[in-house]
Image (cartoon, rainbow, N blue to C red):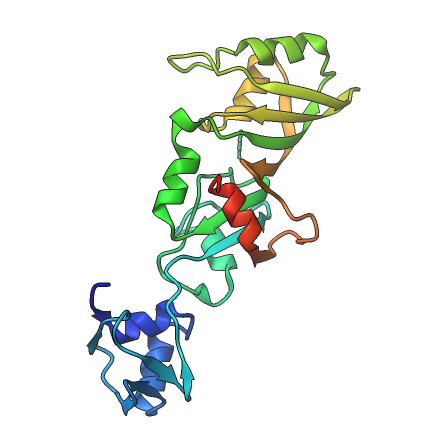
Length: 238
Ligand code: URA
């Protein structure tokens, strides 16, 4: 493993922000190979050097994976001048390199994977992989078999190409309808635009799953948890 700065290593290991870990270094609480080190800029090799804080050895976790139940009103970005971001919901900003895998609109709720694993993210988002995403939607208007067929055929939503076949499952049909939609693409405002193409309006949207990963319904809006080993394995297709 390459050499990294001690303060970055400590922050990446979940020991606090850079400022907090600098404080801990100053207080003489950090040892590298059993010697107290106070310099944040010291370079260490995590595969060679042993680092401890308050006598506890640290192990660098290269990747972290969180499932967030995204609330409405929060943007799927790492930084934003105006709005709160999904990364700010991950308490204590555990790592500085976390990012959301794909985007949900500001008013969309539900499953969002937050990680620093770029390879997994690319695999889940690559158009060629056709990873299924399932959403629950409340729609203005009566959804019928006509819409089910049109979603299956693919819709012209104003892009170069029509959408790939999507599965629409009607749960309740009335003046307002509840449906589940399964899509394999991730175009901008895709589901809202698909309903617009059949002259309907999405009133509420929540993502329920992405590939093998399903939203843990015990998470309240805004809550998150780490993925279990099993969830991670199935998401990676192992
Ligand atoms: N489709 C949308 O229109 N919005 C989302 O947030 C996700 C899918």
